[in-house]
Every structure is written in C-alpha cells, then in structure tokens.
Length: 492
Image (cartoon, rainbow, N blue to C red; front, side):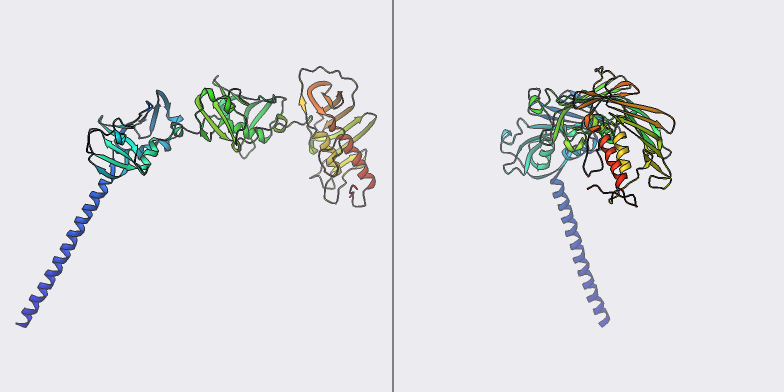
C-alpha cells in the first residue's frame, strides 16, 4: 500500500516536470518564431544574388545606371547615362558590394501613411528607383525617397505597395556614390612587349626623352627588362626612368575627379605640363596628359579614357627629374677592368694612366699608375686618389645636347685618348663653346654633347667626387708626392 502511494507521488511529480518542460519548450519555440518574424520584418530583400540579372538605378535628375551580370554572376558591363563600360573598365569588387547593399538591407520602423500622397517622404515622385530584373524575366522595383529628419535612415517603399519603410542609412550612401568610384583605378595596363616607343615632354622647360623597350636579357637567373634611350642621346636609362616608364604603362589613378571642360584651366589641363605618348605595336597611339603638381596631386586625362582623374605625386617618382638625371649620361664609358691606358692632354700638359686589374682593386696584383708612379694612394678615411682621377674621366656628365650645332674641330683645350683591353680606342676632344662650356668630339666627330667647363676645372674640396679632370690630376700628383710609407695622404 505504501509502495503504491509512493509510486503515485513520483508519477505526479514526473508529470508535473514534463508539463513544465513542455511549457518551457513551447514558450521557447514561440519566442524563437516571434524573434524570427521580427528579424524578418527588419530585413528587406529585393532580389537574391542568384536571381539577379540586371540592376537599373534611375535618379530624379535624369541620371541612370544599368549593371548587367554575366552567366557566372560576374559583372558583364555597366551603362551610365548612355555610355557603356566593359568589365575591364570596372572595379568588380566595388560594384558587387553595391549590388549586395542595395538589393538586401536592414529596415527599422514601417507604417501605413495616412494619405496616398507620399511627396513628403520623397516617394511621389521618388528620388531614386531601383529595378532588379531576375533571370526568369520578372522584376522587383524599390522606390527610395528622402532621408529621415535625423538622417539616420531613408524612406523606401515597394512599387505597387502603400506601406512605407525606413531603411538603413547605408542604402542612401550606396546609391549616392559617384559613378567614378565604380571604375577600375588602373587607367592603362600594357606590358613592355606591347609598346614600341614611349615619348615624354614637359611643357614649362622643354624637357623631352624617348625610350624604346628592348628584348629581355636572360642573365641566367631571370629575365631582366631592358630599355634604350634614343633622345636626347643614345644611352641606357637609369632606374629612375625605368621605374617611371613602368608606372605609366600600368598607370593607376588615385581617384577619378569629374572636371568640366570650362574648369580645365583651373586644374592645369588646358595646357598640360606633362605629356606621355605611348606608341603601341598594334599601331594605336595613347596619350596621357598631366597637370603640374597641385596640392600634392597631378590632375590628368588619357586619350582612351573620357574620365578625368588625379594621381598622388608620391605615385610618380622621377616625374620632375631632368632627362640627364634619368639617363646614363656620361660622355664616354669605361670600367677599371676594361681600360688599359688613358692619355690626357690639357693645354700644354700631358699625363698617362696605366691600369692592370687583378682579382680586385685593392689586391697587390692591381696596377694603377699615373706617369709610371703608383697612384693607389688613400686618405685615412679610405678614399682613393686613383679612383677619384678615374671617375673624373669616365663619370664626366653631359650637361645638355645640341644636335643642330656645327662646331669646328679647332682650338682643342683637352684630349682624352682611351685604349681598352679589347683594343677598342676612344678619343674625346673638348672644344670651347663660349667661356663656360665645351663641345664634345668623339673620334673626331661632333657628338651633339655639350659639357660644363667644370668637367675639367673643378676642385671639390675634401669631397672625393665631382672633381674636374685637371684638378683631380693635380691632387693625385700631390698625394703621390706626399704619401707616407703606408701610401696614405690627407689633404690639409
């Protein structure tokens, strides 16, 4: 009897627990459903990404944009105000982000307006109309109106429905973005192999240069890109010019900036400061025009792109360098291991340099004699007088070119005759051009090069570079005459 009573009590307790558990589960289920319904009410989807075929955005001022998707859901093209932009001109990620934002977005409150006139909400007529055409041919239309009074949201409604929703502010931001923000920032995208020639001109000072891409050089490890400068003289370019050329071939703008034709003068574009001309192997010619630097930017436009833009000045290093700062512009070339003798005559004085390289310059096998005397004399800081003299001859910079001049080979002030280890000979003769310059004759023919008088006569003090040949010779002689037993001499 007692056991039966206990069993009844336990059964009653178990039943009560089950009832409580069931009630809790029902309450949780109902709460979850209510939460889901509430979340659903706070989210609006115009069209899913898998269904979308075309998104058309029309603005109250008459502007419009149509985004066409391809079969793989990538952007096929965009048409903006009647102008079509193919996929290569478009920033794919930026456009996809906008599609996602304007076809699915959060909403706050919604209400039934008291009147059919929705003009107070900017919905009659609407400020913007979004039309999503699906792959099955059906369409969904969203009307976008004014911002709310606190500017935290924007009024929207579905076409054909009376209910008004307050969408998140982000929706307004996306439809208000300038069209130019959707364009690919890479204006040009050419490889060196596609280009036959690059010409550069700077209007204000007349600087010009011409650069030809050459076949890559295989150094055994990788293919090394090569160029040849043909104007203002035939030389190899320095890294500064190569870097600038590569940046132009792959020109990326900082931002597109719509500039009306009547405002071109204010942005330095009515008469651009810089012009790049790219002559392609296909026969096409591309022009890039840039203004002078304005507030840290160059403004510009390109012949194959109707959109004006700006580029950060830091993005185009070397643009303000002169051609002679970007070209290997030494008058004659020579390296320690390919020069045998150098005979120099300046006015009534002559001297001879003899070189025989060992494993390296400092080795005992290396000979560098000036008039049969050892010129490997050093300062206590390790600077070498012989190298200073060598550099004064073979690092002699061209100041400018004048291919139209016809100077006579007379009144020669200096002659430098070089014999290389391969028996090649070079003769450089300097003929005065007024009081401050020399014409350069190479192998008795006028080269078109003009050098400053300082290439012969310049004492650069205690700096072991930039000496003229004559002053470098005098200082090296002084060092040989006064060196100590360790071949060291310090200029006082």
